[in-house]
Image (cartoon, rainbow, N blue to C red):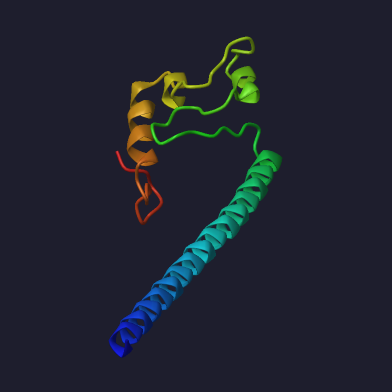
Length: 124
């Protein structure tokens, strides 16, 4: 009988340890999820603030994806380029540039971290 009791005790200790480890892991996962939610909300607030600031000082503000395609209807931009009744969403910004050299320069600079040289000139 004593050996059965010791096996039962070891089993209960093992179960308790597994439960504690699961609780610690779950707590860490929940904290990380909450931290990410808070950071996302903060970035969203910053993004909205920056968007509003740009909207105040610029005639037109458009958002683009990684392929430099316009991601919204951009009705003010459409009006600026005289396409009031057309949807510009999904179009590339460089499609509105009439000079090929300008399109090439934009595509090169849009992917650069530092598009200007140290003297302030743009790369050619």
